[in-house]
Length: 325
Image: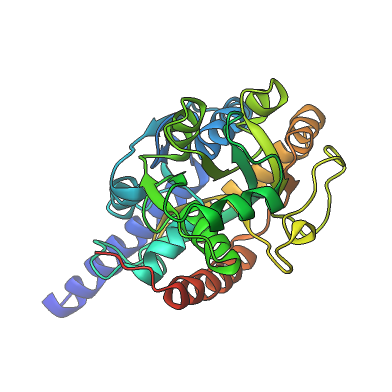
């Protein structure tokens, strides 16, 4: 046998071994704990959802689900960890619209939100709630607008950071109502909610499910939400659109991505497991009771949603003149 033939044979054998190894790896996925990076402080929507779904995913995947909070730089640190992780499905990133907003408005990200991540699925969507401290003199959207116009710059609002979806949502609200407010960014919406409880800020546009205990107990005041219509679980709470800001809608969604080049078989497996968990009666009932819309779409469908959301929020940010970096 000639040296050339031996080399070709050796190459084919090596390629066959590598292919078999890859196929085996996919078939045995997962073979160790799956880490879910939540790029914000504990207690926020992504954290609550990940911990709510984690035990059920763990049972189905036969591996522990480890929720790892990395609150820094408006979610950039956590996203960068996942972008650099091995593309094998053992590291996931919990994301919200803040993820794509940063990709559209920041110029110095260490990653590309479209090139460095593989979509897995969107799980839930929920309209933002407009939450005030109970001591605030306004008890409705109209009263808040009147107060804000009469007291420019005196309302402090909290967010999960610059270029976050609560940030742009509040700036959009201020732009449409002619109110000038002061932005106070935090390392996660949970910390902004805590600041609101302590009256450090007077307004937070936050998800309603992780704050439900507070506004039901009267520790926060839910004056309206940014949905298209009133919600079944809280029919007494008006929409912002019907309260004097026509057309105002803003929702927060919660989803998961993996590092780019994660095998399609792995992202499909993860998507199917999220579907199965979301269909567990007690899980679905809990999510709906928390005022969420359960979505759970395919990786391909979610990739389209990411592009639509990026164009939408990027356009809003540029129109509002939001400056970053």
